[in-house]
Length: 173
Image (cartoon, rainbow, N blue to C red; front, side, top):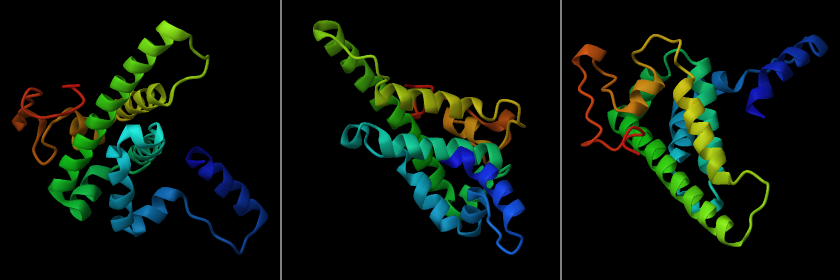
């Protein structure tokens, strides 16, 4: 759904001149508290719903990271530094739980038989990996990828210390 909003908006503008629709990122930027609340679901426990909520939150984060150039600054301004830590920890926890669920699923499939469908945990792992790659061609700081890798996005890269052994990040997982 989120990947189709731009096409829908373009099509609706050609059909109705008096109705104006906004892309999702514009709506969420107008209400930053909602943006922060929604993105807080990236750390939703995988075991409760087979990773569906965390996967959708990671998909949304990935889409927003690609569409909002200064997403980290917006999140820092309206969620604070503690929210950035929560977001970083939530993505790392979701990746860790999804990898563990995927590993236990593979073990049960090898012993009893399996299906051909992609397990939800594997889908979440894929979404997180795509999220890490979404900003590869963007300036390094501050963007979502350095944040999730554990860099201090309030400083320059050269001043930031990266220590995956002391901070729980996707690098540590």
